Every structure is written in C-alpha cells, then in structure tokens.
Length: 242
Ligand SMILES: N[C@@H](CCC(=O)N[C@@H](CS)C(=O)NCC(=O)O)C(=O)O
Image (cartoon, rainbow, N blue to C red):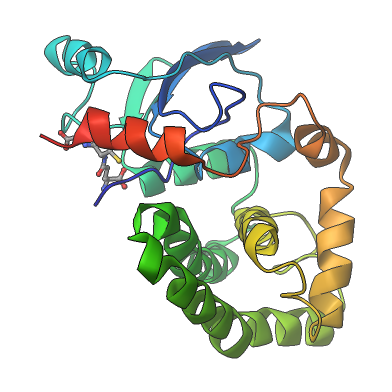
C-alpha cells in the first residue's frame, strides 16, 4: 500500500512526504512519514511537540533504509522513548496508550479500536484519492460520500445520540474521537455539507475541534497537513515508485 497515511504535519513543503524529528520534555522523539497522515492525530490532543524534516527524495528514504532505521524498510517511523516505531497502527496505539486515549479497560479499548478501524477504512479512501486517475477522482468522491453517509456516520451519530456524552467512548477523549474528527475534516474539504444529516456529529465536530490543544493544531500556521496537491502526489510517486 502506498501509505501516505501517517505523518504529523506539513506546510508549504505542503503535504510532502517527510522525515521528521520532534522532542518533548520526556525525551527525544522522531517521526518519519510519507504525507498527510494519521499519526498527527493522537499526539495532537496531548500537546505532543515535534519538529519535522520532509522526505522529498528517494535518496533520503534510501539513507534511512541503509541506516537500519526502518524495521521493514518502510515509513512511517516514529522515534519515541528510545524506540523506532513503525507500522501505522502500532504507532497510533503507542501514542494513544501513552497519552490516555485508549480507554479505561479492555472493553473500552476494544470499542475504541473498532471505531478507529472502521473510521480508518473511510480515511484511507480519502488519503488514496489524490492518487487516482483524474477521471476516477469524481466517481470516488461520490463513493466516499455514500460510504460516509450510509455506512459510517449513522453509526457514530447513533452512538453520540444514545451515549449522551460528547465523546464516543466513556466520558473522556479517545483515539476514536481524534481519528473521527480527522476524517470528518478531511472529508469536509471535498464535500462541505457531508454532515448535513447528522446533527450530533456536527456538534461533536465543533466540540472536539475546540479542545484547546486540538484547536491550536487546527489553526493556521500549525503542523496540520493541508489538502494534498499535485506536487505532493508527484513527490510521493518519485520517492516510492521504482
Ligand atoms: N503496513 C505499513 C505500510 C507502510 C508503507 O506501505 N510504507 C510505504 C510508504 S507509504 C513505504 O515506506 N514504502 C517503501 C518500501 O516499501 O520500500 C504501515 O501501516 O505503516
């Protein structure tokens, strides 16, 4: 899979794949990814600080591979707490666990995991969208909208309606909320009225977006990824295609 899926931010190097390193008081952390992504999400509510250096060439990737920094020769990689983490889900889970975004017990954790995995299935469609042929892109927007409106959003709308909390699981923020917010925001870039039939999700989006650390991340000038553009697509191809 062309995993543009995990990264922690981008700017005018906008949406370029990148190698990044970041640090927080607990110790050095470094992150390496390819494009707009998922890892930015769980670190965000915790106020995780990081610096970035973008992967822009095949040679940069090769250097990381040759240096044995990548367990399976792939990005994303996050260097944190003395480990070099790879595999998107493993990275997400580690950061979520570390920052108390993974529920209070096994049942909550599993519920969060199910919500996250379902949402990621939708988010991955969005992430892959720029790599489709131009003729297929419009059709895929329709497909994504249908998937969101028929399959995924009704589930979360019902959860929020019945649960009565502002969060999906328990009474505190979890990885499920963060990934869902990320997915809604990414989808709204393509389909602005995607939430029109989902009042609880609209409220959810506003409330979660206003959590101070998340709000800051969503403001201009942060490390949040902008929508992918042609330069991003070309760069990803140049780096990862043989
Ligand atoms: N299962 C891995 C897939 C990672 C992946 O496919 N990475 C691609 C970039 S998007 C890569 O590094 N490709 C280089 C290679 O395989 O040599 C994950 O979820 O992190």
